[in-house]
Length: 321
Length: 253
Image (tube, rainbow over all chains, first blue to last red; front, top):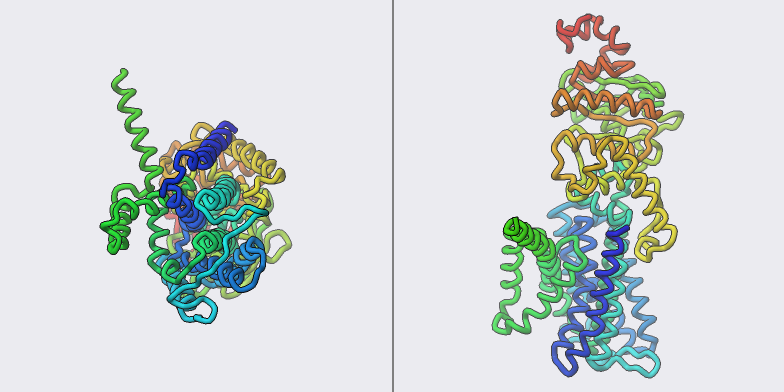
């Protein structure tokens, strides 16, 4: 009970900080960066449910992000349909696709699963590039309308920040609830011992597909938001490199931690802004970070910081005595 | 309670189990013994749906559960433990047991994400029940420890606690005393009896003959994939075939 309350307090503090941040950043380009931190957090949380909790890897998650972006982008730029409606539609279609491919793919384990999801990502990337009539091919799709609620148009950083972060906070809250439930425990059980989980009556096969679907829906939502915020999309944003970047986010932030997903997303989104020198070599930097993290902080920053805190605390206590 | 009817299992050209039949009475403690490679664990894997038998049927009560998926059996009241403990290492002791209550709850992804009232109520029940099972096995103090950090003997105990949380009609234990010291083995014997007293049928595969002879009502002896003998501990100890194949003179009555 107490632990539950603490979780609620942590989330409220986090949400409050997110919601007041723009007042301190008015007119600052950092506000624009934080919009993308929000979008990447949604993606990272989705992937973390799959990899950090259920222990199932996906090297093709950028594909669902792209699918959300393209479905929203194509339909709303061509037909004047309500973008929010299309956002729901793209989430639904991405979820259905994930569900359909999930059954055969998630029977695979380890490297084979990594290869299969990688293949899926590449197929989708080729589709984004080659169906030029719809997607505009490599040169991209422009003229995507901004979202609108009543008279409020989401065409500036301030509005977009709130738009994106309300979705992100919702995704985070839902995920926190999910991970702290029988479903969350069952996912972690599958991660630790699929055999024992099944003996306990956990239908591992179905649950893995379900969480893959949830993960895809979150990614598609992020994609739709991305399309409407940017008003221009191109396949380069949805390729293999971005899938690896997502993976790096959650490994750095912390596998199996929702706030870790945010931390990882924040670091990897903001880092290029500060390290412009690395721009062309970003994939190398990500690779290095992945290697270093798995070597020295395998639990990610969140649990790494926690144990560092504990270490410091015991040192302090030791001094007092 | 559990009935095996002419089970045969062939791996490639090797017959691991050859036409094995026996039944386990409700409320009994049945021991399965025999030399390594006799097919005991294979039998467990067939009963619990990890392997498919080549011939034969498995009945739980009157229901034919041959070829049922593993995950379906917990709900029907059949659960097992493993020879090499299979814990959820990154989860706490209490959480491990709470997974055992998976089939006693049914909230789905939506209900859990949105914290619907039904799920909140269930969660309370699961936590409460989980704590009760830890009390039953005397692990209450260890509730918040990560399972991977438990000493071996406690890990075994946790595996049994978790299996009990599924509220089984029958529990199959694969070498529950392996790796335990004599003190822990004595405690295990007491626990096995308490489990039976709570109305659960127990089947154990075990090499510790003191334990088997002490707790079991019926013993089934296997040798090279065949059932060699079946009877009370006394009958088994007097059976010359069993003595020569497995027990040796030490246990001859």
